Image (tube, rainbow, N blue to C red; front, side, top):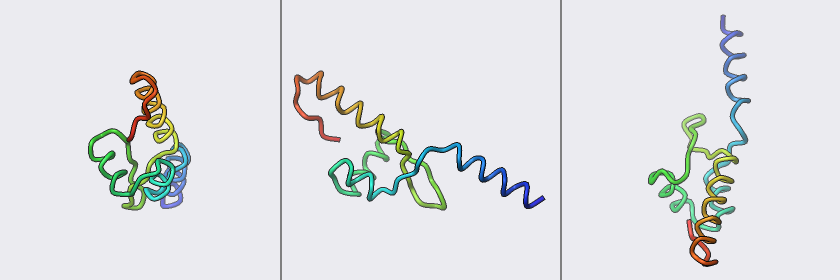
Amino acid sequence: MRARRRNQAKTTATSVGRLLRLQTVAERLDCGVDEVRKLIRRGQLRKTTWNRTPRVEESDLAEFIAQCRLIARERGGRQARP
């Protein structure tokens, strides 16, 4: 019975994309970890909890960056800050 549960957990974990630490997300966005937490709280950036630790899927981060670029284009080329 326990082996079955472990296998199910592994299947679930592999269906999720690569999970990034908040520090890594902050480095990619060139901001602080507190700013990343604010983005998550506001609902602008989706988080996944893994072992009680907040993580961000790489695909969600890519989607967020794409939205920021789109907003920047609509504003006439000004760089959008997250």
